[in-house]
Length: 162
Length: 162
DNA sequence: CGCATAATCTTATGCGCATAACGAATGCGG
DNA sequence: CCGCATTCGTTATGCGCATAAGATTATGCG
Image (cartoon, rainbow over all chains, first blue to last red):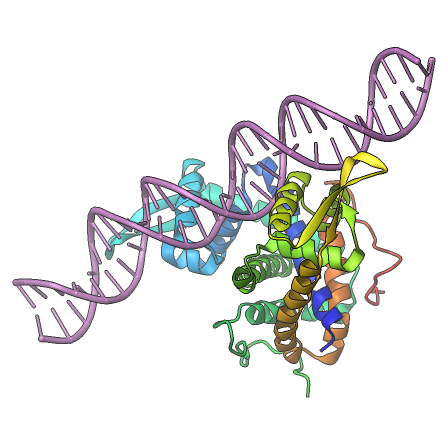
């Protein structure tokens, strides 16, 4: 394994992360949203109402952050928080109509951005890109520090080498 | 443009960013480093001594952050800060021997991780991945908010579509 | 030369998110 | 029925980094 390649890969991911976050903040500022709140809205819109623990899991962030985000989004009228009748500890979170409209609006912003990116890539690269990113994600997220990363064997493969 | 594709791409990048950062923090903790400090060391090791303004530019972070990072790395003995004789405002930053050794050590950590990732991807994907990431980075980083992103025309293309 | 403008670095302050510690509710094994 | 570990949510605190404002030096121009 070429050390320079690993280094380039590492730096490329780091820069992409920074720029993506910066651009997201820029796009969302006019809407009065932050990056984490965007992710929460989109997640709710994708998978429907859930309690905060499930949300923090899906978003890859921690429960206290979810508490803050849901409080703020509720104050803005984008979501509803209601106690779960089946579990008095949990509070389930759902989009309001305003929140659903906002989620659609956000998605439209990213579409125009994705179009620019897609225009610069080959068709097959575009096709494989989501799967590749997912593989990179599962691998970089080593389950235990000094163990081979999950093979991500079943759902997402990219013509495994050999 | 399929809205679902743009959505998937957006979320994939977001998740990769989170996981990459988390893993980096995990790898660097034993070395007493943070993510930004790692980037600074590697950048210095790649391109040689520079002043802090140039560093903040290359790292994609802001000058005050560079001030804090260089102070801490200097206290740890990994870098040297010296006034620039040609410009009394600037302070140029250089790696010490200890810093250079540390940079090599860091790179070795990422190599083992990159190996796992490469093993899950096809040879041609691996070959194009850095360029693809760079294209995504330049595109996501729209120079001005409502203007077509830079074509990244000259150096990095990935068989442009059509 | 003299002065306005810009560039470099630093300090002060705020924001987003994490980790730690806690109270409340659940469910399981005795 | 009763401990007791577990899970959910919140509060308290800290860290990394950004933005805003200030001090010092460079630079361009009348």
